[in-house]
Image 1 (tube, rainbow, N blue to C red):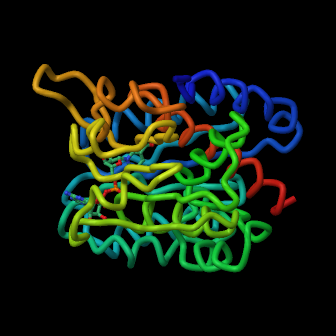
Image 2: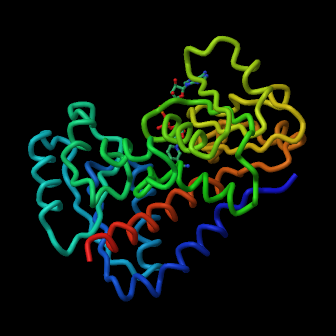
Image 3: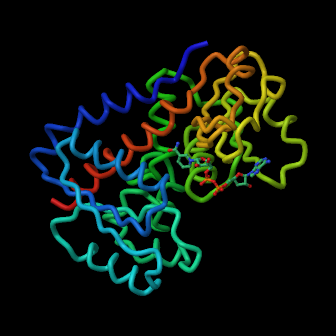
Length: 277
Ligand code: NAD
């Protein structure tokens, strides 16, 4: 079994854009609403990655009780700000705010999280049109490519069908000619699907959902989940001990998909800046 080491690949990718960033002088802005602890940790990692890549960074901190139209007004300000070449609205947002409405207000050319309908729609056409793909799925593809893991013709099973991870990674796998099955909370007999997977991508948010008896020998496992176990330690959705015994490759949590998401955001930030020159 080999680990899919997202941490070191992420570092290499971030370092690889430094020279280009020094020429382009992009700035990434992050809108952070409230003080959600996990969001604050993610934002801190994004800031550190910008510093490492010589990308300008700006944070817009807003109160939890901000109204939806006030938040959209902040998005509009960044849409109009020529210094900001890309920005994200860190999720989750408070329940009082309808996320799709906020995402819809982001200028697609600055949408470096790749959540805007225009960028998601382009992704449907083919891999050539994945200009600003959603960061987590994009990071997963880069991780598989780095380890020369073939995708074409493989049985790829995705568990989770969120708009930000499960659905777009399913499309990106289809773009690379995999046979894709997308499972979710209403899937009957999950194990009958996971057992067929050559590549299993799990993005649910439930520690220990996938156990060794649910996978076949030699499977490639990408664990997207971020959870805390009973001891308060970070863990994924996959029971690492039982699954790693059967897997040919497995991504660890932490150190797998998380850092790759940050790297993909940095690459999107460079790409968006290039298109605005
Ligand atoms: P989400 O809550 O939007 O979606 C969860 C998905 O899991 C849904 O499609 C749901 O139908 C499915 N699901 C729930 N219970 C299930 C079950 N028992 N069997 C099969 N499917 C089930 O989640 P999300 O935003 O896609 O995130 C999923 C996980 O990935 C979370 O732990 C999140 O923190 C993590 N995440 C990690 C990164 C990263 O960079 N590593 C990025 C985004 C999300």
